[in-house]
Image (cartoon, rainbow, N blue to C red; front, top):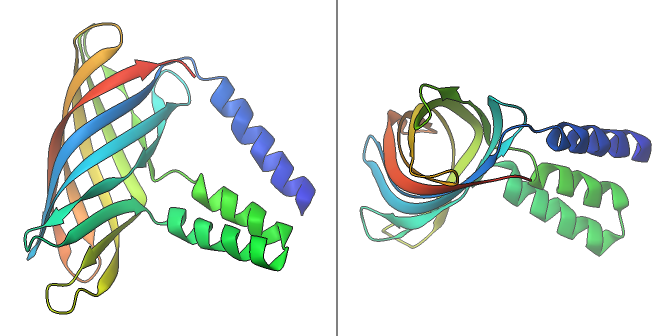
Length: 192
């Protein structure tokens, strides 16, 4: 099992090191509206370039719902991996530690960059490894819902490194159904 995990880590590292394009870090102001679920958040998004077009997406979001209660967005496997990692430390289990780390680094989704000109690009994306946490207005109970997005981001490059972006997506939220989300942000491109 340890050899398989090592092989997966080495393969993932090799793919990441072959990245020919620049990775991105974006800070966005976002909103989500699905049925009566409404939230506003600030989301740092990290996209790791696999090649000139394909990226792995990681996104966190921290904010409030329409009822002024806490709201957070994470990849689904991030908190699950964290719990397994901590359980592995407590029980001395290297398998749980390794599985926890692999789940914590699993991407939320993928995007595909389409360069339309030197200054403008579009990036369709899909995020399937997502979840939302929020407090209920009645009892301040922490709730958890699975979610997913399919959308498109547009970027205008202001320089070689900086860009402004806007996105919109169709969002699926467990028990609430289908809705929309969108946002604007500023991004920085860099080589890994």
